[in-house]
Image (cartoon, rainbow, N blue to C red):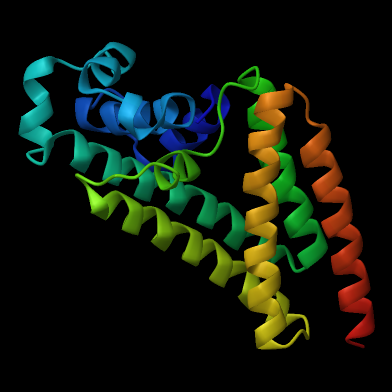
Length: 207
């Protein structure tokens, strides 16, 4: 993730910021959106984190696959926590607007180099490490369930809530890819505006 987002993850998950294990996982989270799973090598993680080479297999006996898998879980949990926080605020439209703003900020902050670490893993074949694809799918499912629960709580049917949850995630991920290609936030802004209007009408009609 971008520097700002990684800093927030550090604050939330690890009071021991100097711990080499935590640094390696956080560096992997930062590198995945830019280089993908195949390009996020142990050497690149060590250079980014400053962790000693001898600590890699001490902390990650499963090697690079374990490191990436834990980074996917950490990034997914962090975004899930943000969704849950917005859910507690009560307004589903505000929650979705904030979700789009999160991705917009990290695109701009990274100079359009960083996308979503989960998508970066999901789009690769991962033939030698199929658990990475499963972990990415599990993260997307958690996000979808969180959004669906929010919509159900505000009066939408379970079926439509699940569809909307999936649609929001698909719109964000697709728009982020377009933004990186165009080096502009226009695709994400357009998707955010359309989904905002869709939710306003959906929530109004359910009454």
